[in-house]
Length: 213
Length: 422
Image 1: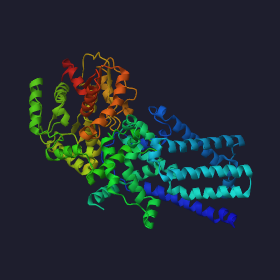
Image 2: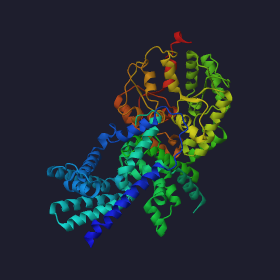
Image 3: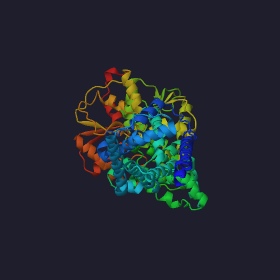
């Protein structure tokens, strides 16, 4: 019964909540009213938007020395998670069989181990900083902690499922993924998508003023 | 709920648009913005973290626009916002933020934090949570026409001195002139040499210009306090003055926030585009130099650096012009470690210098500029904002630093090559 629920209705429910929620949230940003800027532009807003969407992947050189740890941990976590999500052999197989109908070459086992270590280490470093650093501790919200803990649990159960190969552990992983998908659109996890319009809005603002941002 | 709280929250609600939604839903509370803020780096007080200064608006967004906020309200377990949610942030946004916008340059998810802080200021100002010094300055700007209470009579007295010193006529209310020059209160009261300098330069370059007896003040206390209604009224005065004289261009003076108010935010404040062009004095001088109408002679031999005023450079886009203008005159010019769009603020922008309560914090924040200047071992710092100059002069005196502060326009006037006068 539990297996049926987790592999069936709950899976589809979580997918629907995730997809509808993400589209709804993005729509509420993109289609929300915005006042037209009446000042005469000095340069192109759209090229500024495109540039800033990509330029903010790297820290400004003037500030980089002060945030090395955060940048390193951030990249370790995000790249590690991305690699696990789309190139771990069980995920590639799952996406092919249950969602897309096609697959691609998964990463080798050693790369999986490296990616998992990067992702875990990065997430733990970021979370510890959130708990210890006075600035991060002051500004962090309950949601930030829930999102981090939930992501950690999903990654941990994923490793268990892979190592043990048992149905119970596979179901546990899938169940945590479903919780994560349901929580995603209503949480800080939405930054996965909303960083794009956020950077674009700001880049357009700087772009029309002729400022390299 | 008190009337002032309701007024403040209603104003904040009006500020939540698509941009604000994208900013708050993408912020991951990484705290990187703190490292870009001189009020944090010089005090180590986490409350000065830029994104923390936006809390009143974020709380309202979370409560009324997010899923969990709406759910909490529907279940009746949501905590209502109180006057303290606004009052407790007054010191942070007015005393502890110079609106320099450096935080907006470094946010990894692209939040324009400075813009959001301005929106918070708008809500606080409407609710009456603003420092006394700024309230007084704004009132004088509305009632008298200048935040320092400078009347046209004082301007006329300055014009007489300028005419006596230069032997040139300062044009006043000349209909059909190409350029209407505006002034900041500081330039009338503290640095009248700016008026003398533009008089000499425009005569040298053959520029058709005028001052207006009805629109002489460029500064905008409405922008500094965050009241868009008053900011619009003050911009409208300039528009009316410019339209009356039928000028083609309006010159924003050596004042950072005046440039933001006139060039970039003004049309939005009054809800319509201008029928004239707004140009910063540095842009105009650069254009005149490029066209061969502005020639300088002689070199400054002392070791110089340039302080980039935040509102003109980082938030205004006038970065290359001051360097183009300095290049032919300054033979020993050095850049600060962080310069241009990543320069550090003097500490007194965004109305901080008009806010007596923030005096001590402003001088603490100046330590960042002091360390930049000390590292270069320069003889003089050139800038193009009378407010930056005033704040730095105070910092230099307080710290007994042995450097000179110069205005760029004055430096150009001092080096005019009279053989090439038009």
